[in-house]
Amino acid sequence: GAVVSQHPSWVICKSGTSVKIECRSLDFQATTMFWYRQFPKQSLMLMATSNEGSKATYEQGVEKDKFLINHASLTLSTLTVTSAHPEDSSFYICSAREPSLYEQYFGPGTRLTVT
Amino acid sequence: GDSVTQMEGPVTLSEEAFLTINCTYTATGYPSLFWYVQYPGEGLQLLLKATKADDKGSNKGFEATYRKETTSFHLEKGSVQVSDSAVYFCALSANGQNFVFGPGTRLSVLP
Image 1: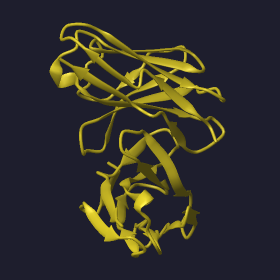
Image 2 (image 1 turned 90 degrees about the horizontal axis):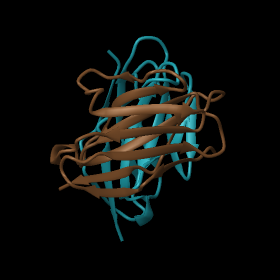
Image 3 (image 1 turned 180 degrees about the vertical axis):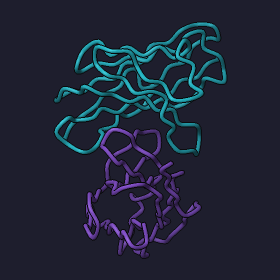
């Protein structure tokens, strides 16, 4: 099946710094990628939808200036958490839609801890 | 809007017990339905799916049938193993683009 990777798998950063998370579709081209956030023992909450070559669409309540999303190619989307704070600590999961299939493939997730 | 409801967890079973995790949904139209599994510290993996009414999705001994009349997609397995311990998410998608996830049900299987 289709494979989606994320890098890094975990990261610890200091408050006020920025962190970039990469999401790659390894064996297919993804015109659309999605970024989710998952708090401990909770479900996934969609943060934004990323379309290749255009601006991301953010869900209500998600600060676009804080969570910068770039989808520069058909296989790569990045999420940058700017000026991170401890409340941004979470598990971030990306997914990519394989255009010919009616489903999304999920990456393994990135655990962000802001100290 | 669309929504997914799952039974409250955690669910604790002994090995070889029968598993049912209930899932009901509210949606306009006829969405595709999915079960995803999340093992500790990992992302989500598609377990099974069904795209239309009366379809049965199955994988690794798990089954779920798309019941339009009861708007349900209950997950079942006849004999669980310790390795099935994970969090299970029911989800729907009307267009393959936007997914709505249930809250997840944590399953613990004891040896």
